[in-house]
Image 1 (cartoon, one colour):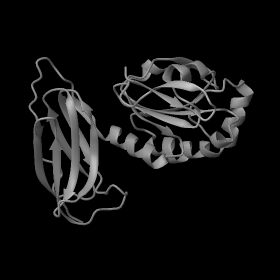
Image 2: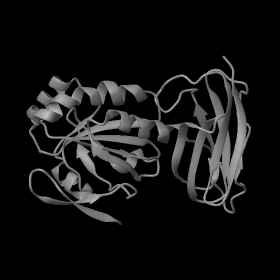
Image 3: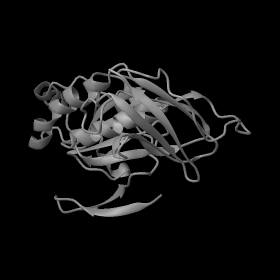
Image 4: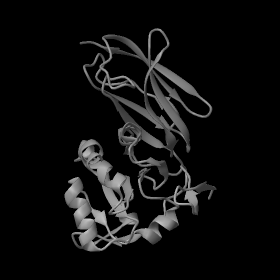
Length: 258
């Protein structure tokens, strides 16, 4: 595992799990009863808000983790947790919950787990469906967190890999086409590799990146909602889908018709 050393504001050295590391399993008690085990949620995108129950910044930012992050992905292949790294009492964490309005599970006594993960309070982590850390940064970077979660959720495997893999590297026709406002973009991957899929306009300007991640061999499908990287609706017209692997790049023409 690749490790870096970061100096935190409280003056202690912590070994941090960098993006691309495998997330470590844990089991923690929930504030509202029962336990949560990380590995039980394999296959889901996992968002973790690491907080200190009485940290002023954590209290100020907590509500946005509910309304601007967790609430945005309800009903999807996604879970959100908060982990108290200050090992506060149940009443202390309950006070944090009451003041922030958080409704997703809050987990107790997370100090040792935070040490295992190499993380600190006021930070957030996003873990992909394969259990790999894809984001670690300050909790107040809501737009960056949402962009990563959206990217990970947009890639849906629609056929499991088999041995030997029966798939070639192929960008298939989107459907529907023409479309408004959303279209599905199927593709297949012949072997594990880094995959990037972008949308370009007729002037060659990149409009949106749907995914930039590592994929196993298999058949997948992405969805484009007709919006650009700034969340603005793209205009009617011809666009180009570019699927880039480590050896091959494929391009297809699509039509957004309003």
